[in-house]
Amino acid sequence: MQNKKRSLTGDRPTGRLHIGHYFGSLQNRVKMQEDDSIERFVMIADVQALTDNFNNPQKVRDNVYQVLLDYLSVGIDPEKTTIFLQSMIPELAELTVYYSNLVTLARLERNPTVKTEIAQKRELFGESVTYGFLGYPVSQAADITAFEGELVPVGEDQLPLIEQCREIVRKFNSIYGETLKEPKAVLSSNKRIKGLDGNEKMGKSLGNAIYLSDSEEEITKKVMGALTDPGRIRKDDLGNPDVCMVAYYHELFSKDEIKTVCEECRAGKRGCVDCKKQLAKNIIEELRPIREKRKYYEERPELLEKILKDGTKKAQEIAKETMRKVKESMKLNYFEE
Ligand code: TRP
Image 1 (tube, rainbow, N blue to C red):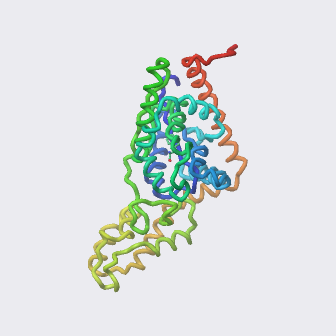
Image 2: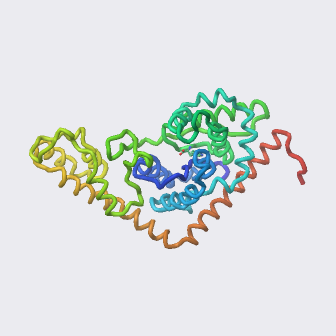
Image 3: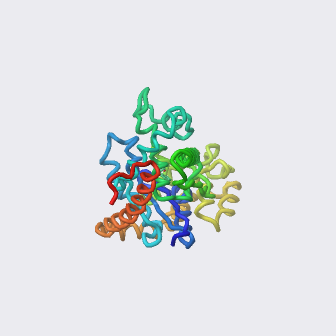
């Protein structure tokens, strides 16, 4: 047990998870469960969600359960992966305070991920960003180090946050003595999935996503509205699947048929409506086990509560132990028995 490596990752509960998350990170997390040399933790980052949703606590609360359902429905198994809730680990807030001395404002302002996000959140922040949002990389460093998470499976957009965490760890260790472990990002090999509208990114705010929890009707409706080759007006026009989102999704969901789909499109032999219906059917089939598992858990709210409570309890014990070491290194170990 002792020489196992720990992995830690998480999501902000600001909305339900979609197939972009599924191909991008969730499948990887499920696959990692086969590796016995790793002790896995997945955190529902509700405190971090509040940094840009402080004015909407109900949204965050509702989505804690939605994200938990998403995890369980794709096969993140609470027996193999500890799922826990950030806000119930007060040590994370405590560590954040100590780490905040080890990072400058200028360094936070230079963080490319934070910079991009601030630019996207003008409406919320106006001309001046909150202290909490600018500082969330510090809190994320607390998340990772509290669990001695040596491995952090994330998407590319999170790399600047892991780098910032590594810097904090080095600074901490150089001032207070070797205490914390430096984490490493584990990049998921899967590519980012484009939206139904052809946008480079699938996102809840963009309205171009298929959610893991979407009903059959919702999936069909969304696929029927997907972007196809704009140059193709009539069924017998020759199509170009390279600029068609339906072809793009066939590639992901219709492995066996993809060649004929593209050939018939190029030859003007397959209409877009037919093609979309086929795609919707394939997506519905692929996501069926996920929807069924979700339903199982939705009908068992006590089980959901228990999974989150048990996971959080386990996480609390580990964070306490790290906190003890940190306080000892910082000469803050008062009143110890
Ligand atoms: N920033 C991550 C996201 O937006 C969520 C997160 C919070 C996280 N704490 C973490 C990811 C620690 C990895 C490790 O998705």
